[in-house]
Image (cartoon, rainbow, N blue to C red):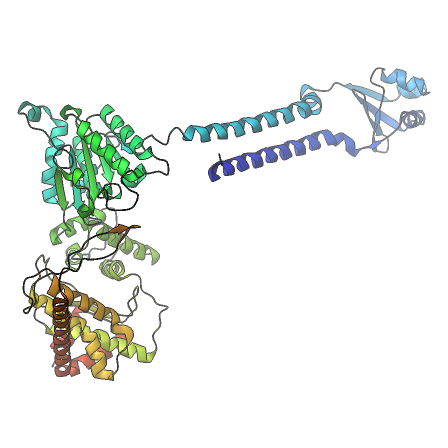
Length: 613
């Protein structure tokens, strides 16, 4: 079996460490053992000659080594026979006894450490290093082989009810009042199941949280666990799937086994659509790994008894692609919808995310909530974080109101592209283009009010007109859509009116206006000639993860009529924009000239220009 890159890396690291240890020991041994080798050596006959000439003052005997010190301060090294004594050896070489008597003789016995370093260490250390290297290598191989038997184990992260740091309650989740009320039954059942069982009521086994991305589905599931004080097993649906067949089903069985063992508990599966898509709609037949995992989840949920007190919660933002077997009674039969927060909820969410961030006194979170319709909880958290980053970058200790307002545009459009410098001609065209959008919007009764106009590049936009509704809107009228179409055509009409030329700057406006006009005709039933008909039903075909086509359920004659109606709506919007800009040309010039000078117009200054004579 081919080793994994991680195993190869660990083996390489061990080998490098062994080499380093060897080099350090060798260097230490060289320093300790090589200290004696730095002195000049004398033969025994030369030593006897120096003793007889009275040049030697001291001889230190260390085993068979002789350290000689002369009267002139020089040091020498000599060696004697190990079996014989120094005096006997020197007499054999003809030393004069009276001369030898004048030399200071010292016999030094070798210590245990020196003996260990000099004799035992060179033998023992290589053996230890080789044994250590073999042990490390065997350990890596054993760990790799052990991992093969853990593929089927659950990868769920457990949040214990005793973990106060990660514990979340309903107080920590702003908004979603209806969802909280719906989930209080689950909390009550986990806390006090007896009153439900005595009356014969069965609590739902599965709860499916549905909503747009960032609306707080995962946080709400954790809050249910925190309120009930039960273990929370959190696992993403994609973590079930591996390259080996049967791993997903095995992990599913292990997850439910752990949850039942810890009952009462909650199993939370995030992004359920990763494994819960409709079976038989894609490639791979009916036996691929994803479908086996889904089948095992269905079986486990069927096998759970009421007294198990294990609740399966799941989250998805694509409930339309889920397999019908998941949604039938007895499985995920309790469905909780999480909507985008309204203005009051947004204010509460902003307060939660701003709790640990120092704010200036003039900060009004209500104004920020008014300017962020359509923002999810995650968007608002990102907004507050971006504002804090800007304040820290400018070495300020508190977050100001303008930091939050500027962060709204950063979240919607992206960061400012200060390097994207327009020429004078392009700047003038961009100024008139955005002025056209803003002036048409301000002149239409049913259009949203303009909050800001800018020709500073952000993200992919060379300039932008930020218009936001005064209140949250859930129903949109035909008059509102027509005002939107006219506003979209405002930039195109301004360029043609002022410069008698058209640039590519209006391409995105035209694309969006065309898509909106086609929806008015084919989806919203707002065409007088076609009437209340839904044309062109979407039919999803999953091929390599992509949605390919829509079904065309109308004739060629109807298709021609749709094209005519779309063209009529766009022409009507363009004529309306041209009419407004022609009639208020002086205002258009004033707005454009102010943009060229200041690059940005806030709501108050823009309103003054529009209202002036």
